Image (cartoon, rainbow, N blue to C red; front, side, top):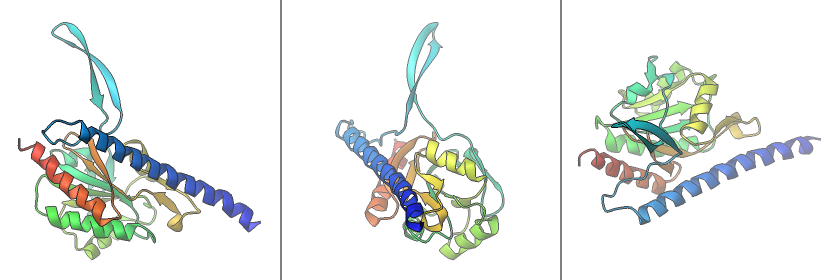
Length: 232
């Protein structure tokens, strides 16, 4: 009987992980193909869906494509204050999803994201934004202690909590990564190990494996490329 209950749950979890892996593979392939055909300005691609928008310019109807952007949000940081999309205005930032009691990939992710934090520490154009996907446990106090234990100070790396459904929604529908409850998963949650690079216009410019040194090396290199776009 236990086996009959476990098999569907494991199959569902494996299906989620496979879908997420396939998505990251497709995103990486799209970025590679874009780079093969890009111009010499070395700009990163803009990822995500595009929408046709018709507007009137000089009395004529013009249709143009606009890329999806990260919508406004309202969460609470490890300091107890409100964090919105405006908090990240005029910044490039790296977003991720984790939870403090995660027994699997989160410790690896935080070691790797700490490398990013140390490399860009003090750069006024860079921020990091970590969303907990277990807000029932990860209170402001828990996040504050977690940040301190990582050696994080100041406001360059914010750890945010809030309504669980809103966090899951922005993860899956805006940042394009998996974040959802699953009682069969370790810790009761399935989530992506991806780090998402977002530009100053709130466009996604890259998705990286946040569990590996190679993936994060690529992220940091692309962050420098993205910063260079704003100095040209």
